Length: 366
Length: 212
Image (cartoon, each protein chain N blue to C red):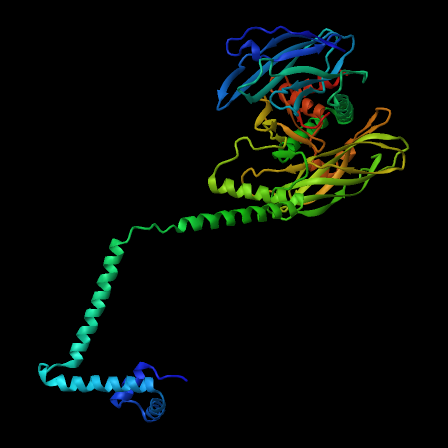
């Protein structure tokens, strides 16, 4: 998949052509760019740097013969952040052959004045997932795994809402959607910083805190032990021990990480992923050396007191995945902190815009 | 043989010594011709003064005269000291030279001590201390380091996510939503998931620092 197709972009009075992003899709890409609009984009000097404010509205066409279920675009600005990169993922799509769909990239880039003359931003393709779970793309960002987990969650949740509709009619479906809306509104919002390397920057003394684990009966992975270092509002260097209790080899897993503060508030802080080769019955240890920091957002500063872990996804060696069931997600602690799936959020949005009939029509599509 | 000093001889000649001292000096003078000659000379001078007394003015207050003479001598000494100070070429006292040297020695010793202390600290504690000092500096001066982040940092909030490296920033925003859900991976990525208000599409923006 050699890149060979560059899209010529329209001249814009507010943004010189030199700083327009280069959209670079593989020659045999299943999607093509129909149009690109950079409307309100601009670049301004700010101190000793240039601030590029990019708003790209792309229209992509599915030029393949299969339905697209998700896509991930890779956004790179090597000049600005040599080690960093970004991505924009659209899960829960249902784009048929020759149909077009919109993609937005809203980006701000602070780069040096002495930057070289090339395009500061490159937008490429990292992967596309089709409805038959086949995948296309270089997968540099492990998009395949992300999109497949999202697709499995979408299938689970569509099945769940369809069953509610079948069992209790539109009233029961409506009740479940309203509960989901309330649940989304109640979820605690927080800001977080992630720093590579394990180092605490707080004055408070660091302490080791043991994980408690949520028991998910169907999970192929059993977390047996775990701890992390906690200092005030920082959590770092989680260490977990897991056991494969299934009869299939596992190559990837993610442990969700719930933190509790001194006042009893709980929130899903993040996940601890691990790529490993774990045969049936085998144990393994997961170590990560990053630091999570939760900045104060007014009010009481966060003081982490306890932690709970749960298995949030597992990928078997054959590429199939395990995700928690709807009954697992009904566990009170998970229900409080876990965010709804991409598909559930989309369905809730359809209900808000088009009402219960619009939602039923959407569920009946596939 | 130890000779009596001139004061003892003068007092002996005038008959003003105490009983025991007078006996000792007399015993010595009787054996020492040199001291005997001194005593004889002193007695002769005393006799001459007494013979000259009628020629001196009457009603002299000898005590007052002695005090005046002492005062004059002191005034003279003070005046001489003042004149000597005035005439003396100005010599700059240069304690600074000594102070600079001392400061240099002290600075070198401090550098050696701090370096030894810093290098002997465990890495984590050194970083912790460095961070704490940085915070103190920041809180005291109100200034933040302009481009002082050596680490790659990811920041996620419900409105945006960004990756920072050496003061350079790449930020992904989502202006067409009501707020998003933050997700963090300890492998080195931060993401925000939101529903686009216009299209209803779920969008996940992520930034990474890990080599993936």
